[in-house]
Image (cartoon, rainbow, N blue to C red):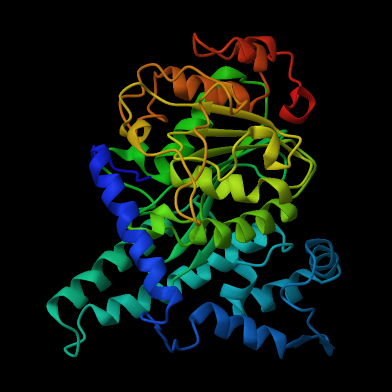
Length: 405
């Protein structure tokens, strides 16, 4: 359940699960009563200010109002009024589902610029340790990269390890929309990488966007690299439970309900990201046409038909991926359920030839990326199925999982 191509043996996973059982037992008996006091985050402070703000003498709508309500509100404003709100409440507007996407891009540019200045000062703050100054430097350089002209940052939260989402293509004018949901160890600093770039959300989304254009040059597509949830760190207890997935699912569905237009949406969920998608599936809007999982530890259900979605469900796993050694079970909240590529699960199983391990599914030139791109543009007849999955081939007419069940 990690973006890194390590190969933990089966006994390591069993040990982790055993430790998780001990942790849960201690927690339920009160031995781990942890209480943490957290200061108000920058994003929450911006939202609080928004709630007490006004424009043109009128109170602003609640920041968590329905996307339709917020869309109507922003449409009623003049360009000057929208610009004023962006500069007053950049983090609030930049993360507001229902705000026009171009306005969110502008707001997040402002917020990133502000946070860059903060981290630049922290780099030379004598009160910080050398490690703290180095961390500030890394964050500052990440903000600088995200501020590169032409980047479209749809969400940004600097708190903790940070959350971020980026759009490739024209989201408002797209005929097909794809959302990449990554796995553990995903945060602001790992959002993109120079080395092994296709193992990070930005590289995954860029590769998918280019592959979709190759698959159907005439189809207007947009791809979202969605790292706007707090992913588990490494292969610890958090990765063996669904807590992060449940919290992420709420955020993911909030995004999906606020996407502009009516274009079909395809979900591409890698590793622990497939747990997030599995938990979110029943609440996804009807425009979600596909949920494709790669390197999945499970989707917290026993069958695809139990996901509660009309979307087609696809699954793939490379033969060299260590995730196949994870115990596919769920017991007392630990583990993530059945293997999505098993025949009994009921997903369409796709070829992942040449993916090379746990982190290689978005590598250009692989069957896995070609298949994901074909799904993204709706070219279902072009996908290549795993040799053992007759159900996949029988289902290439495009019927959904719910219709097959």
